[in-house]
Length: 444
Image (cartoon, rainbow, N blue to C red; front, side, top):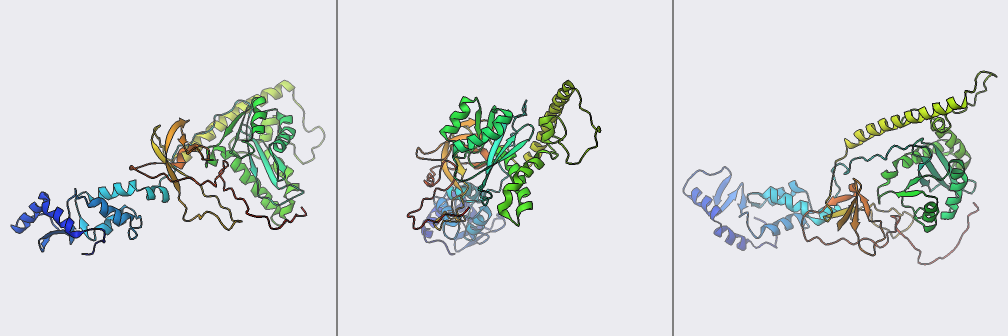
């Protein structure tokens, strides 16, 4: 029998000799009595299917589990593989349950392995709104080539009507530049909104941006860390806009800016399945103008009161359609999700998404980096699917996380995995050059 060097076989033999249960089975076999199939006596030692039987209370079992699971040969394998490897040499009653408990409580496995479970947290739709352009969401599309001096698209969407504005910006820009564009293109048409949903971009977290909308009476609502699905509406719109520009400018990417206004018109006048009409018709109470030339006298304008009543009726129908669409979306999403709740005061690991910086040679290794960090204590439950964690005082990451980014800690005496100091409040790797060797300015 081949066993790891860390195990002393003579000490194990001594425990076997002192185990009354094993000695009783040996006595019955020696007396010729019938015992469970698979047991046999070889050289005075009890074997089960050619495996040495040891007491299930042996003080060597934790060492065996650690060696066959945590060791170089074990490689932090799963329950079945660990059991099969141990069964090459040993057998004891309740082995599978002990292995399962050891693997589940292994800190390395909890922080480094992929989770095969469905995402945690049932879908929580945002409430249906009462008036158009009172509650909006916003985001950026970055990484675009320079086109007429612009390389960023600022997307603003009304959450009720789905009406959107696409504003162009140029890097570098600050909170004041974004606020001026927002006021010029959105506020002048619709007024200040009651609330704004956005991610945790540094612009949206700046003091200027916060003070501006605080004075305007606008509530800023931010997505939880590493969970962009909170602002899913804008994320989907970004994908639609990128697809539109790709279709028209793939051959000439630097010409995307001249198609941006057409993309906005096309999006706002197109049919949306969630609201069962176009955003243009919801906002203006009429069909979007056609580019076809109508014959004179083919249409007539109705009374203003009738138009307003028709528009109010349309908005009520839109609310019903949105409510129905939300219900269908929630039912479909929850089929692939599971409801998970954590108690305040319990310990959890949380998942960080590795930041991919392809332009820098020295970067985090994506394949071998730790998937979960912690454990950290839950301080507060926020809503139904978010929790506030007690992170280290020097942490630069927002402490509120969606439940899908958390994992319950199993076992005790875990060592806290330190957070990388290179992570900024906007969840990206902060990279600073050691030395500037040369400067070159682009003609664009």
